[in-house]
Image (cartoon, rainbow, N blue to C red; front, side, top):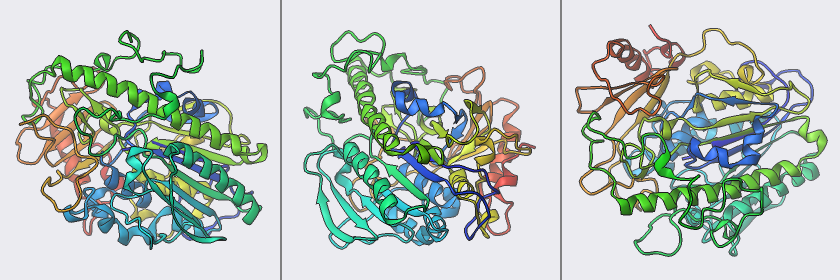
Length: 518
């Protein structure tokens, strides 16, 4: 899972793919997309939180699928998973790079590159992308610094190094440098090279760290944390006074940071669908989850440092003409509803993630908060709109540009509902283990295939094989703790979900029209 940040300048028309409209100097765009960052980590990130100053915070931003590969495919293409065909993380199971590769020629990178942007991608790309000695750079990218699967460890990784003006270099071992730090260094170098090789040309930079994703293949009794922070942020190292206001949390007395205090932690699940119902989490596991939560907080300190480094690389002139966007590909849960580590549910902790957009310093001032229902399918159109690109196939994509909302404009007839999809991965599918598989207790499976609708005040879920839906009034029950499947509102939401679940397909209603309440 993951978060995103984008930098840009002038508001333009609705986004698309071909021709640049006449306008002042085009803005730079910086997009930070983190992995598995739940909204409960944002308060511990001072630099990222500060993007809200003279920026726009989206309070109701939802991913289309709370799984890395399907979610990222939605961002790249502006389409829901049922339209991209990217359903899971593995090619042997209807997903992964194998399913995404046919879309590489239609991502926002291709449109931006053709419009004269110098583009760069750093970090985690798409699950099962083959990083080898003969790695291939997808169309649209002028720089390509992508990590192999070892990136989850943050230390044992290899990075590609392709710079259009310098050519393709062999895979580069990390040399023990914490991966988030290395990505920050390379991001700063990309900005410097953009000045050198393309003076006066705008750039689009996407930085996608693996953090705060867990390591893969964790074994009981290992000393290395499941969620590995940078060495400087581990318990033996005290943060300087004032730098981390909530304390080090390295000892046993940590009253201000406790996962067990999060809403719905270890709540009674008797009213939930059968796949959720389970016994309480015992004290030993609660202790593990407490450590995991603190380590996740420690991990995002390096992300905060990375954002600060990249922002500090910009000149004053560049700051005046850059959008910065920050978000995650999905959220995460740690004990909520008695679910252990994972992210594939329709509950808010998994699908409702931060989205902050820092506007150019030369643009509108003031801190804005938008409660419009936004989704990751909107990022494709948003980036192109920031760049002033008209896209001939714009209306065939499922999302819409967020730029008018970012600039503080009222947008009539905005969507009323977000669509959330999930296809249950096949644990027996051939290939390496899925790095995003939910950590489930024995006898308690992860969620079955489902489709869900999230409105401004409700969550409605339909599970494959279960005749009863799941329903929550999220105004009176923000933690989604009291399921009310017989609520009268389910009839209308069922109708909305039926439209959205097949929207955009031949003969079906378009997804924008489908996202309206009856």
